[in-house]
Image (tube, helix red, strand yellow):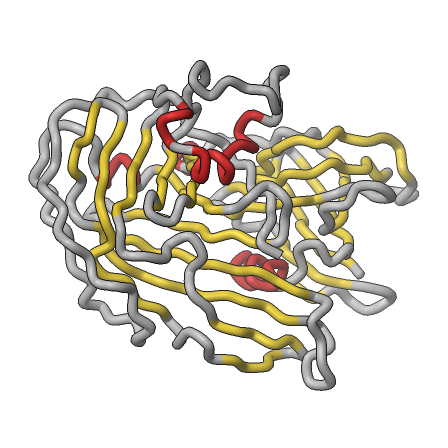
Length: 342
């Protein structure tokens, strides 16, 4: 199950970085205690070089490019962080959980001060990390089993390296590269790339001892009040699946304050006749939303159930690769309705 595409919008800007941070100290192993509000705050005294404030403009994701799971990490300006992990197995069912099994966790923690290694590399380590639920705890909610697990990708007590855009890819090592190679899917030379001649297009966070790599996306642009949708006004449909053999596919969806970003291809649907009138090729599309956007779930003749954006986000996290339908209606450049349909 541990394969999923989460090809994100990479931050293309090179950060003008000089200077160095404080020396990191040895980190204790992550715990499974209840989260506390007492996560240590990093004393960031640097006035030059990479800062946690700059990293806080990015979202980091650990995935593999095949669908179904991810660990998502967000860093705060004081060096603290928060994140989630989820993986689903809809085929693992029982009498009490016919809707399948979900592995997940929410976690908080803090990084040690950044230490400069060279002009494009900074290192740190996890000072402390705590989970919302005890690892191994299980419960059944709405006919689905939830198993609370470790944060995949955050294991171990070794160093984490931030590699900046422009870093020669071979520097990261084969293990880390194996987790981020999807960044070059669109390169004409893929998969026969010479990584000695290729550089990173975005910041990569590497758990070096474990050989894991997180890619980054710049979501700071999503605060732009004037953002408009990449798709024209109209109605669109796709499906929550990674297998596009017989249907349109939606492989990932990210939520922001005033936009959603989807990786999908779409059928274009006539709003009056509900007939197919065209299609949109597979790609990553930004769809503007606002306070009037409705998030709904429905099926058959029943009245669609309306929910908040956060409720909708949590709801669909259980349904990726389920084959259920996904629909959008856009008017005046903004989504009026975002829905999932059975």
